[in-house]
Image (spheres, rainbow, N blue to C red):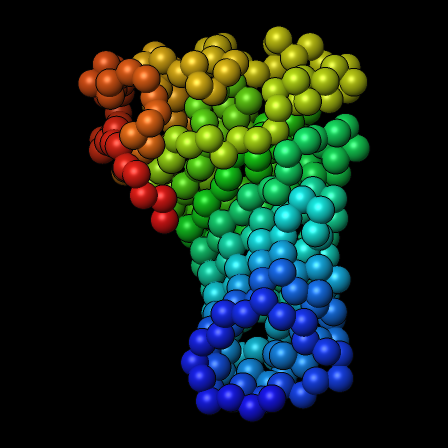
Length: 311
């Protein structure tokens, strides 16, 4: 197949024997594909100037080797809960990555040497104890690979799993991130991970919290896992200074936003800007009711906003 086009959005099956020649193609979206390693290799070899690749629910693919795609700068991978994504990703030339981890078969080999920006989330609706232990190891290894990334976005499920690791005192890597975005509800199950991320990001300049219902892991699943590990869940979810947060995300009150801001200010030294952005349907109170804390040694811009859009 030969084409002189710059962009393809398609849902198709590429036969294993196909020869692809898309010599001018710069942007490619593949969705709902039965995509083998051989088919993916054939596509990549026929797209020498490809700059942006999106794989959305592409089954069968195990190894994604982009080492010969010298022009590729943007990679987005979206599996679904029952359609695993690749377990090995070699993307040494990619600068911008969106990666949704599949809880059944997460990526275990990850090479992103020159990555500047990453967005990570976990596709999961029901968490069992085996997955909880497995995912902690996966997400911490991913953070190690992303230590030099300067712009990082983490979803609510990702923060849940990091919280489990923090409660269990599993070591976190140090990060060089300067711009951190967290897409999560504000409640007790993400507080341990947020606290540790802040402490381990000594160069952080900007923090954005997009308050949204992206946390699909049920609270009882997190508590059940900790009980099996010998912990008392009621004592696990407080911040290090003993502050308690709401247990249910939709029950957030102005005092919880104030507590979050205080936690951020206490655990950062270089921060210049904090933005907490709410969907207009959430929360139930007016933002004017939130008491914005100040610390004498901090000179940080703090903004509480409503925003319907989510980039």
